[in-house]
Amino acid sequence: DDTVSVLAIGAGCCSKLLNNCKADFIITGEFSHHEILHEVHRGISIIVTDHSNTERGYIHAFKKRFSDLLKKNNEELEILISEVDRDPLE
Image (tube, rainbow, N blue to C red; front, side, top):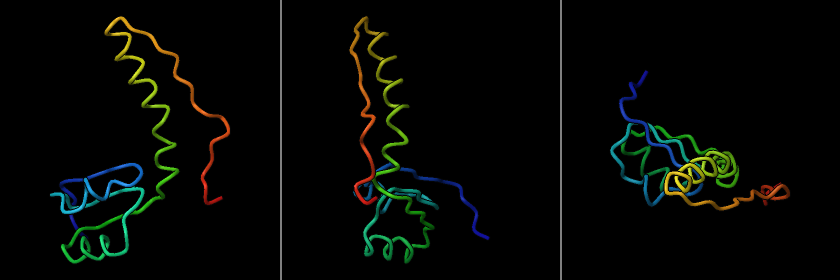
């Protein structure tokens, strides 16, 4: 029943960036137990999605944005993304 006006999202472990932020709802890859308790006490809703896999989902978007930035500055760089990297908890 809560209204969300401000959403904060961070891949991986963004607890240092997102802890105490002015948001109604936080989606992050990782928060410690005590950080979660702190935010819940503040009335903030949280979804913790998984540190490692949230970063993996962003890698391809980062590659494109970084490549576009390099091209804009007349630079090129081959960016390789591992095909064997996996979640260490699997």
